[in-house]
Amino acid sequence: MANEGKYFEAVGRRKTSIARVRIFVAKNGIFNVNQTALNTYFSALELQKIVRAPLDKVKLDNIFNVEARVKGGGLHSQAEAVRHGLSRALLKYDPELRKQLKPLGFLTRDQRAKERRKFGLKKARKAPQWAKR
Image 1 (tube, one colour):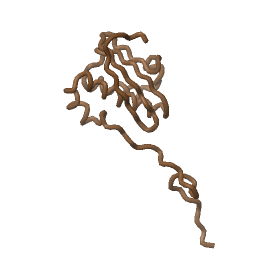
Image 2: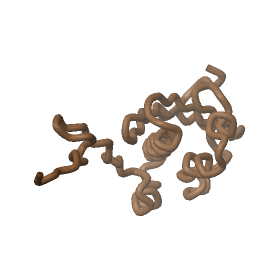
Image 3: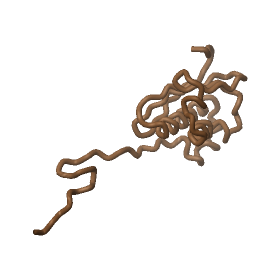
Image 4: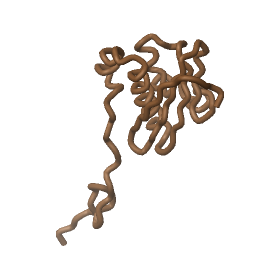
């Protein structure tokens, strides 16, 4: 790993995505996801904003080098998992940031996931067409 020294680590989750986020106190502002630059891994600007939201809201943009490892799920789910992990790591750095992050919903684990398919049905709740005769 390029970053060495003291860091704060946290895990973020969303649907089936799991992100392990480490923040290093440094002046570079480098942000890597799976050893790739943020804007390369999340090419959509919307996903980059989702991931960077905690740093932007607490105005600590260029103070940290961020390194995230994420697996599972889709890109949007992974972006929200990284955001969740980054928010938790920021809390370990400074517990006072809770007042800013909690109202934004960044510390809440979104537990919604796809419902399992039941036998006799086409999907989780969709039943085959019923005919009386």
